[in-house]
Image (tube, rainbow, N blue to C red):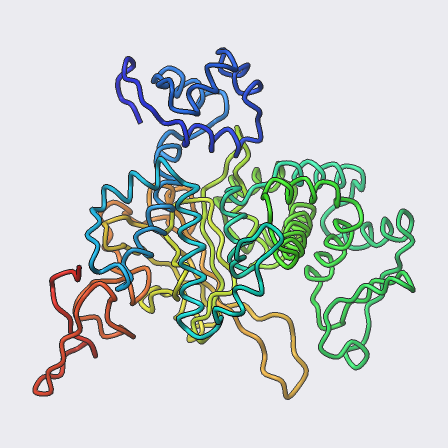
Length: 481
C-alpha cells in the first residue's frame, strides 16, 4: 500500500473485491468515502487511480487493515496459480513469478477459471472423471461444473468466510430468545415447536442407527441421535431453524454465486445453514468480546458458550465484520490418514487445493498426544511465518465395535497476530525458530526431508542405486521448464 500521501495506484479489481466483501453498493461506498459513485465506478474499472487519501479513508471508515487489503486475496490467488503452473504439464512454458502475481492481482476471475479447469483436468488424469462423464455433466449454461465441494469452498473463500446477512439474522434470533447458552437447546426446541409445529426428539441409537439427525417432514419431527453430545444437539436445532427461517437469505447469497449446478447449490445452502447455526450459538458481538477478553482461549470460550472445541475454532475464522474484526485465523480438520475434510481461512495461509498437508506440521502429531494442545511456529519456503495450535477431537461417539472417529483440528494465524493469543504468552515470537514446512510434498522444494512422500513436481527425480539419502527422493536443483 502507498506510503506517501500523494502516490496514486490503479487497484480497480482489488477495490471492487473489498467493496463486495463489505456488502456495499458503489453508491453506499461513495457516500462513506465522500466521493461520487461515478468516481468509484471509474476506480473499479481502472480508469482512474485511487489516491492514498482514499485508501486511508477506506481503512478508517470500514476498519480495514491496509496490509490485509494489499495482500490477502492476491496471496491466495497467487498460491493457487503457482500450484497449477508447477505441474509438469507446463514445464515447457517459462512463467516468471511476477507475471503470476500480476495475473492474480488484476484478473482474479481468470484465476478462478484456471483453477476450475485444472481441477477438471486433474480429476480426469487420476481416472476419477472420464471425458464422457464431463460432457454428460455439463449444466444448462453449457460448462463443466467442478467438484461441488471445491466449488463451495471457493464460494466461501470469495466471501472471506463472512456472511453479514446471516450474522444479523442470528443476532436477531438470539435477542428474541433472550436465554443464556445453557438454555439455548430448550429455547430453540420451543421455537421450532411453537412457530413451525416441529417436535424435537432425542432418539436411541438402535432406532437412529447410522443417522445422527433426521427431519421427518410428514410427522413434523426433528430426530436427533443420543450419540450426539450437548453442543452438537443445539447445533442441529439451530441448523433446522435456519432451514425454516432463513431460506430467503440463503437464496440471495446463492444467487450472487452465478450459475452453479444443483448439487453445488444444495451443498452451499447446507453450508450456509451450518454457518447460521454457529452464529446462533456464538453471536458475533458477545463472542468477539469474549474472545478478545480471554485472549482467544478456546477451551474457556467453549465452556462459556456451551460449544465444542471444533465449533469454536470454526467460528473464529468468521470474525471479519467491518469495524469489529477478530484475529484472521485459518483452520483445517484432518483425519489420521491426512485427508483434509475442512479448510477455512480469513487470512492468507496458502492451502493446497490439489494435495494434502505437510507432515512436519504438528497438527498430525495430535493423534499421538490426544489430551494435549500443541503449539508451533511454522515457516513456509517463501519465509512467511505463522503461529498455530492443534488438538485432537473425538466426535461423535460410536457404538462398540465401530471405530471411534478422531480428527485433528489445526488453527493458526500470521505471526504478527500471535501476540494476541494466550497460547503465545511468554514466547519471543520475533526470534523463535520456526519449523520449516511446505504446502505439500508435491510443491515443496526443501531438500533432505525425511518425511517427504513424493518428489516435487517442479524438479527432476534423481535415482542412484549406490546411495541412500535421508529422504527417499533426491532431485535436481534446477527447476524443470
